[in-house]
Length: 162
Image (cartoon, rainbow, N blue to C red; front, side, top):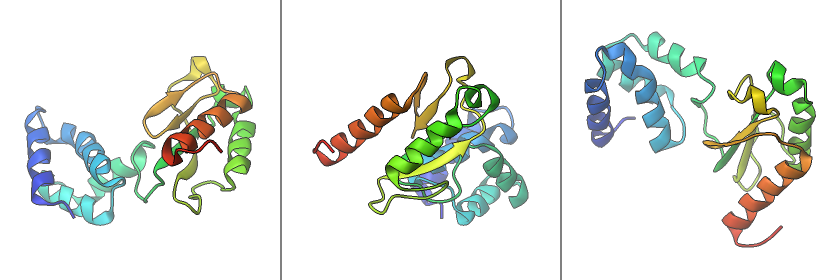
């Protein structure tokens, strides 16, 4: 559910655009930033606020890979598997990270620290392979660099070097 403070922020976002259509994705992004993901109730509430059919909101929310409709872990890892990244073996990078964390596609580690997802494109085609951890981009990756990123996150989160 969208509370009154969120509603006011969304109303402010709407005013920044010449038409309500333009506020759909920024509003969904805001909801995700606050709640970590976008629930069906959130989409229903947003449809009421924007005065759009729910299907229009769901369509936008399900189209963009950066918008999450299910809860994710504290650190959500997305590995690009588009053509540019696949040419430099990102599928193997995905498999490596999956093995390292002990989770598969769309799964969350038992401690809730990491979730893993393959995505179609992260916009880093010239610097493949690429991945994102939450909103942080990492490019020109290999197994060692990916391992270092994961170790750094674990160290920062737990205060212990794994």
